[in-house]
Length: 436
Image 1 (cartoon, rainbow, N blue to C red):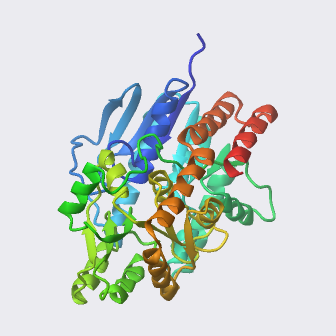
Image 2: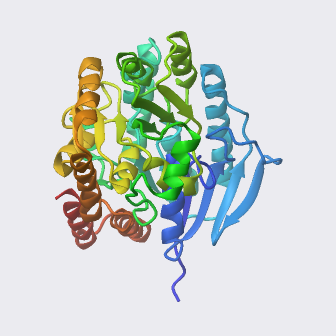
Image 3: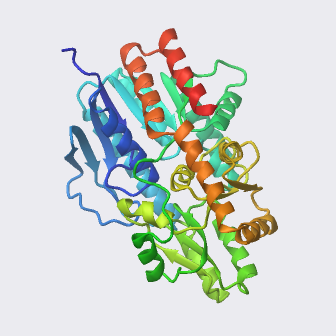
C-alpha cells in the first residue's frame, strides 16, 4: 500500500476550541485523515475563555488518528492590544519551532490567522523544510484591519501587505472562502502573475443543524430559561469582535423599547462585548440579552430559538472576509438580515437563496426598518423564507461538497506541487456546482 502523504496543519484554533475556525478545521482534518497522515499544531483551547490546561511548552495529544501538538501561550485579554500582540507573537514564534521540529512533511497547511503571520509560518516552513505550502485565507489582512482603522500608522499596513503578498506568491496554492475574495487577490497582483487559487466555501454540518420549530422541547426550555417565550428574537450568534460594527448596530435596540415583544439576543464573546454591555446598561435597555458561547452540541437548538438572524460585516470588508455563521443560519432554516456590502459573498448568498434581506453597513435606520418588516410578516412567510436558505444550502453548500474540494486540491498539491489540468477541471466542476 502506498504511504500516505503527510500534511502538517498549523491552525492555532483546533478541537475542542469553540472558535468557528476550530470547528471547520476539526471537521476537515477528521474527514480526510484516511487520505493523509495528519499533524496539527495549535494553541491550547482558549477562544471563549477556557482555562489553560497545557503545562509544558509543547504537549502531544491525539484526536482519532490525528496527532496534535498543543502550544502553551500566555492568557490573552481581547480588550488589550498589547495583550493580543503578546499572544500573537508568542504563538508565531512557538508554532515555527513546533513546525521545524516535525519530521519530514509533504505539505504545510496554514491559515490567515494570526493576520499575515499565519501565512508567514508556511512561508518559513516551506523554505526550511523543503515542503509544499497551501495557504488558506479566511481573512485578508491588512485589508481587514484597515477597514476598522486598527492603527493610524500606514507604514504598518504597507509592510504587512508586502509580507502577505510574499506569502501568497511563495505558496504552492492559495485557498479562498468567498467568490468576492478572488477580486482582492487579483487586485494585489494586478501587474504580475496571480497565484494559483481555488475558492472553497466554509460550511456547517447540515446533518447536525436542522430546522426546528420553537415548540421543540429543548428549544422551548432554552426560551423559558432566558425569558424568550412569546418573544420575537433577533439573534446574533458568534464572535463579538472588531470587524462587525456591533458596538453601533446595538444602538438600534433603543428604537424598540416600546415593543416589548421584540428582543435582541447576542450569543458569544469578543473584543466589543464589554462596550455593548455598557451601552445597554447606560440606556437601561431591557430588550437586549447577552449569553456566552453555547456548547457545540447545543448550537442546533440555540440557533432555532431565533426568528431572524443578524449576519453582519463592517463597511470595507467586502472581498476581505466571509462570516461563516451564514451556513449555520441557513442550516437552521431561519431568515437572515444581512448587514453587508453589495456584491459581497454574503449579499450574493442571501439574494441567490431568497432567504432574507440585505442592508448596507452603517445604515442604521434601514437596519431598524428591516427588523420592523420581519416583525410584521406572518409566521408562514417567515418560515418559508428561512427554508429557502436551507434548500439552497442542501443544493450548493453542503459539508461534503467543500471537503471534497479540499481533498482534491490537497491531493494534487501533495502529489506534484501543482494542480494537474485534469484535476483542476474536477475542482472547477465542483466549484461550478457550488456556485450555480
